[in-house]
Length: 390
Image (cartoon, rainbow, N blue to C red; front, top):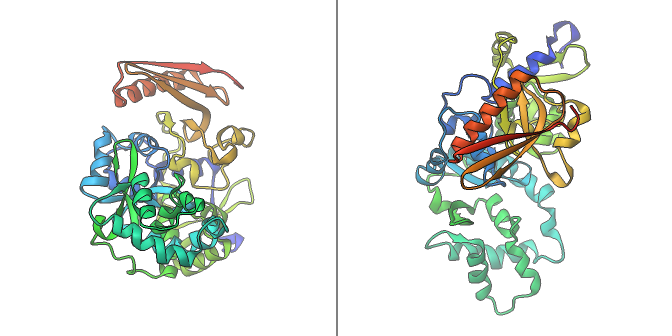
């Protein structure tokens, strides 16, 4: 770490505004889908609507087809299990980087449930199931249920525990994804579909980057989208272990800068190349409020959430059992949570405030709701207020 004498200092306001800029949540919204997804280090995709609303908040005139085209026609993006053992959309060209950085993390940490005695052993899965899954997918992508039926129909004995291999939470298809065998294909109706990686993205070579180099590069990508941040923040976001984070930091030291948040003892890391951009920020410019969806990247980048939400409100957003609320954002701070009720012709957004929201911000939030309704192809919109704590 730098000596206190040479330590760069940033204000809390700079930290929040810079984070908004890096997250594409300021005024400039003329970006393409792949650029945004790349800079955000992926979009959380376990909830179907999340990536679409995340991009709508960041790209001017965004339409769902823009993401679908990148995922399923151009295939410049791909949906795969990724950081923290969760489903993400990432650039296809970066799949080798994420794969090499995170494969061992999943098998040694997040995927330990596969070691349960209720599951076939890893050796048995590799010998019996992985080849059958690839064989079943040889002709075309398949739904999870179709894969389950085809694979199990080839076995003479199908113990009850084998049925859990194709769990809707990922199951063995999560394992084959982390092994670089399968990825998500275009949905089959409303159901997820799976494809062989070598057929879906034949140009991708997962062996092009080593694990240590991949983790160093992943840290740089993370700091570009989420810095300044702490080592603990990167560990939380990536799912890696603290020791693995330390190695990645050591390997990147020449390009990193230590900064301290004024008024606190917090020491954070950022890219040296980003320092000038942070210093040039206009801290007084007013920015339009946002309605971010559940599991938006803005909410998942840091273990320490003080840059975006008051401590007393954290549990209102970061809920039990891994649930995460959709939030209303005003000048980089979470001021409420929201949920939507949609019919064919109407969108009603119920906004539950966590703190007092000014009249100007409320007026702008009502316009955001109207714009969201237009995005969702409804004729009428309504914003209902629940002043729980205001």
